[in-house]
Image (cartoon, rainbow over all chains, first blue to last red; front, side):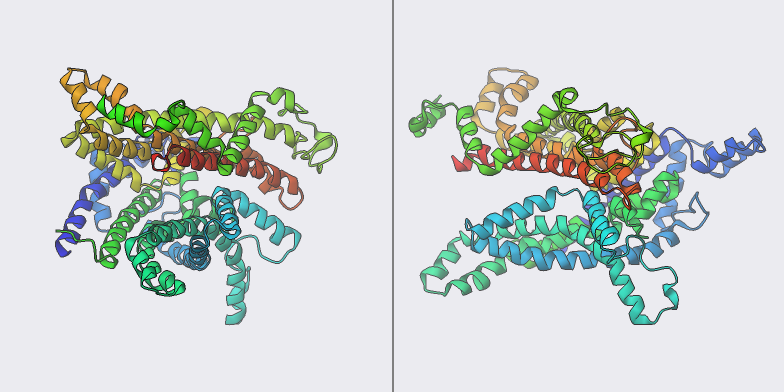
Length: 324
Length: 294
């Protein structure tokens, strides 16, 4: 097990290298130049020499590979440089956004597990009944629903028509002065709609996954044996079958890691939610190279790490797997 | 031949039916599949016959009739420039289906070629390709597409090429796995012994036996591509106005959400139905093609 983990970690290094290389090449070989440079070209008071000076500052006069290795050396010490947009450190900008995205996604994961897992179990236990059929329809609707449209519909109904919920941001302007509980309620109100939008897709795939997994286990020999020796049906399901059916669900936590930190570009933009996704969208719109590259590398790395964690978790909870 | 004979005996009951007939039969007996098929077929018909179905010119503006609610004249109301939303949605079906089909065509072609090379040749070629796929799969796809789109002049062509070249990894993996499975089977060995070329073995003998899961994944990815196109157009990085796309109508809808509910409601229903249709059809195909159910 220990050697397996070490081997997997070593195996991640070349992939990580590939991630940084492709990120850098896409951003730097693309046509056009950073917005800051574009803007200065528009300015008639800036001479050609000044623009050359700016290009030197950004190293745009050097070959691509030179810039790549310089950048790589910096990001190995977690230095992602300064934003082209406002000159602040990219890492600071990211750090202040992570808590917002994190709280939103943790709530969404809790909601989708709380609904998706029981729904999947019930659909498996009562398979081919009307309950199973309705769940199947709900699941299909859930993962075909375009998140950004669903978000607009929630805003339309609960924000505009009924006026129950705030439609944008994370707190009401001026809320800093309010007492703690009012601020807390205010935060929750802002989170309700984004959380619903984030949960709807994942609850659907989760319940489907849970159902499949439980159906797989129910047909195993040891479940038949348990039934044959007279174990009551509820105990067969919730004691013998469910424990094993939950094994693949555990690995899903690994796959959720990148979304947990990376957020969603389009939904956060719609709700004006100050999270990582919104930061990424703004960075792209401003051609803020350092921020784009930082987000791309961080989220890709988290995906890699998530896959790794999923494998390790799977090995940990499933004693039948041995890695030698 | 021996294997063929055994198969024939097993299927004696169905001897009068070809494989294709059996698959179609299973497909059309499945409620999920038929629902998906009806939705997709209607969308394709709407796209083809758009000029006959639409009631107005989708691009013609009419300042006197801006932001009107649904009425007998404008079934889904009008937008801020007085354009008929119903007609724009009808024409938008063309854009979405076009992007869905072409970009999936591109990604499936790339996926099949790269996956076949990796699976068939193995060794260091496979290592290199698999590594590359692994790297590609780590990227947040939508962010990658957004980044690339932001650098180019957005148009329907850039949209479909960018979606195509960023979403081939799944198919490549599928094909690679399938080829690894069938590569060692007797009929492939026999073809090799007969001195056939690699390309002929791959395309004539291996791929037809490996293609079924690709068909399912392609159907599902048309739905995914439509979702990506509408998202991009929604953010202003896809199909550009005045050309109608469900995504850019929805973006007008967001702008006028306080006053014009119809502008954000109807295009979204269209996107939802299209994606749902392809998802249901993909599921139905999976069940119909699954040899375990035979």
